[in-house]
Length: 168
Image (tube, rainbow, N blue to C red; front, top):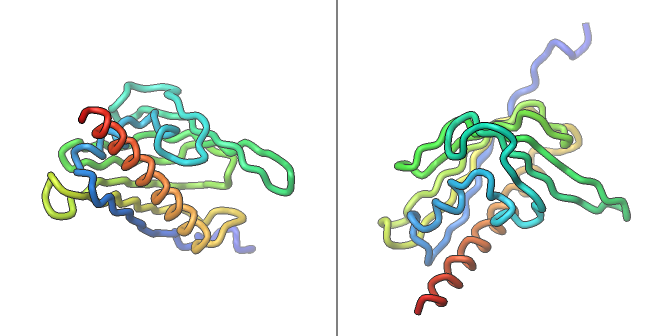
């Protein structure tokens, strides 16, 4: 009997980013559009609908970006399925159903939470539960999510700032 039969403990974690000048109701549409992730996630080159109905659980998106390591460029991709979405609570959950990045089981939840009230800043919270990922340490994966989320928050704030300054 090898260690095959023993289940490794799941990885769990959460990261958040504060958007000081952006109200939750303005931030949520950027994230609620499940197949528009390339607009807000730095480094993601493509994201499109594979099957399902936009905004409905069961929707599957394909996301891909290339990474260069030792002068070799590889495309990293994942198919992600929307499992739940709640526009009132401004949150959704998704799972990775297929990828070339070593994910066996991964469920993520993203929520937009008002900091004080709906008219002031907000927080984006990204939590996950997954099996350990081949070739990663939990700390490295958490720091990758942290930097991804900070980059997303900046892109969303920049988009909101440019849209408000354009209307003035």
